[in-house]
Length: 208
Image (cartoon, rainbow, N blue to C red):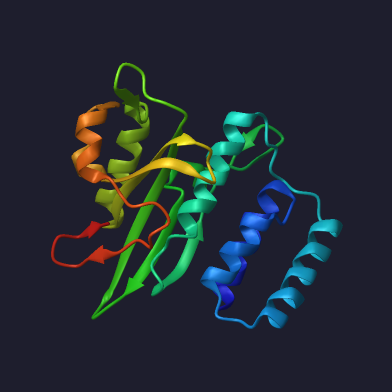
């Protein structure tokens, strides 16, 4: 429970505001009464007033990316453990080394404990039915992380709408991405129903 609260606090600290969308994520993830939730919201808002956010939201595009990360965190499986939310935060123009890692890393406790990592990508629209996913060097970093850590990496790709309410959602295994650009037709096979919790399949090591 404490890990979940700390993760969600970091989400709120990222833009310095505890939004209604973030409150709804808290309600979905934490099994608390509404009275306890309101007490927790009050505590967090007090912390936000006394601590200046270290995140600088530099433009609308960046905000959509952050909102999409929060959206994906809200879809994590109910049995996830030990979340590590790296985010894209920087201070005085210097990015933290954790930004080289996938955005969200967590464990799933089934018959054993399985670690999973998700890199979140939000795009406003396709271009000629194609989508730029990530630069080659970014994909190489994720592959290196996956190989060294033995943690399966997936790309959560949101398209259209806004970061907090994408029109389409795809969960693509890193191993299925060979090029920085994917076609709309190819992405369709990894389509995910909006607002449905993610599910990890042990046999196929897939996130759906």
